[in-house]
Image (cartoon, rainbow, N blue to C red):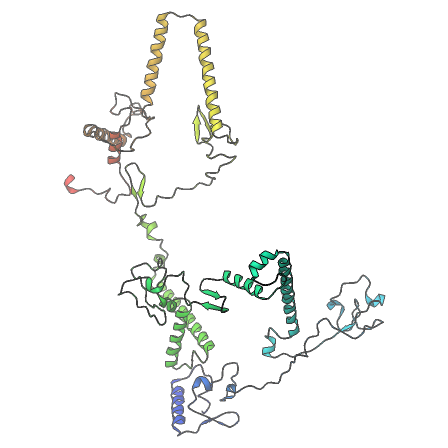
Length: 568
């Protein structure tokens, strides 16, 4: 019973825990005898538990204070006893010995462990160049000696570093002395004062060192060359002081003694955008919350009877906390699975987000009358599997960006040859000049034909009239296709034309809805140009465009399918 208080027991029953507390109280009061260690000495009952209890790697299962005393160990390793690396034992043998290495002839290793170069004819058969035996040592190292990084280090090796730096310093002195000898006498007097030209002292070296020391100043420190001291500032001067973050009197309190501001000086600002949010962020970031949870778990476990102390045995507390979290997660998963198995509804947990279900998002986008984005982010264009905007051969536009005379080409140089090299403005000028020459040659051939065939004045007049009529019809047909500024800039609408355009738009909607009932022979021809006899004009006016926008149904409008009872 006396060994209950200091032995490690992870799980105690209520009765054992109560007995342990009563026994400790009786020992402290003096009514019960004190606990004894292995040597028969009494243990003071007022010693705290974290001192009296041995750690896990020194725990013998019996009460003792031996782990608090200095452990006297015999030094098994001295400076003179260490691995003899690269040293051979005595002279080599002259003849091959039985059981030695067949390659080099040494007795300390076998043929497969030989580190020498494999010979064409080994020492076993040649009997030449037999290597001496290695020195094999068996040094038993303790726990600390195995992990000592300087174990076996020869301190005399560090003297070589001093010698190397002394040689560099000596070479620097000689080089500076040679430079001073090359200088003229007047320059030397200006620099060193009244000293002679051949004199040389260590003050020049000090000035040189001070000069480089002043240049090596870093933010937050300054080297004083006169007193040879380094002044370290507590704050880098480039940083803004904490009390200047917010000059409001009612803002966060600044303690000038400790130079700390625990609260956030700018509470109205978003924490992700704020540069400084107070000194308390250290308590809620990194491993600080994890340590606080571990300490809270240790207190709660101790109150429930588990013998755990975070400061006395942090490893045990960490393992118990990890085991507790694993059991908690496992219990949570089992309870969730049991509820789903009993009531169902697992398909609702794997539901897609609301944006995909309702096809609606909270992103706000505002468009102009012409369809341009004024406010918000425009929808991303769908990408194809082919490469886009790939410019080759010095081109600045893609193939197919230019169209003329029924041919595709490059817009940057007006070239109709695919994968050709770009010529830029020079190529455009060349194509224009070639077109002018071609047109002039055609005109000259026409003049020759006219001169060859003489016509009367009446025939010439009739031909000119036919040409003018065909030209006017072509212009009327394609007039609406040449408008490029439709719907742009300041628009002035005529109310009468707009009213008429709305009526025509309604007729077009009715005609479109009743197209299935119309005979194919009576169906209007679907083209960009409608005749004058029909309700649509050849040219699309601003009023027609406005009527189309007003009558166009937006599928994204939530009130698109709403019908008022008063309109019925």
